[in-house]
Amino acid sequence: MPAVWVPLFRQGGMCTPAFGYRNSPEASLAHSRAKFLAVIALSIGTLLIASAPSLAQDDMRARGDRACGRDAKRVCKKFNGQGDMAMLSCFQANKVRLSRPCRAFLTGIGQLQ
Image 1 (cartoon, rainbow, N blue to C red):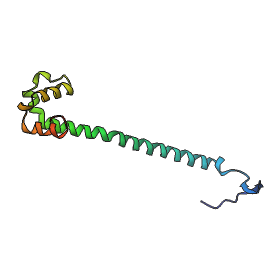
Image 2 (cartoon, rainbow, N blue to C red; image 1 turned 135 degrees about the vertical axis):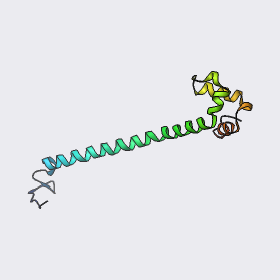
Image 3 (cartoon, helix red, strand yellow; image 1 turned 60 degrees about the vertical axis):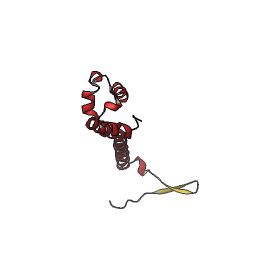
Image 4 (cartoon, rainbow, N blue to C red; image 1 turned 30 degrees about the vertical axis):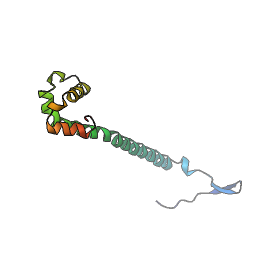
């Protein structure tokens, strides 16, 4: 970009431009782009932060399904489809009948003593 001569005038002991670069179309466009990019960056950051817990929860559910899926069908089949808390209550009530991997998983996440 070529150098541009900007006339200055004194106001209160300070030199200020006689016309503002801030009011030019180029400055307005640059300011709009900067705002747009800031909003996009903030949105992407928010999405990444918000998706982290759900990914961890999905991983925990997959591990639980691998460890306790057979036990859910064998020991607690009448609670199938009634929600996680109903299934967990059945697992806790029947902990001696659970497979070793299921007991280890539930103990590891603090759901069995």
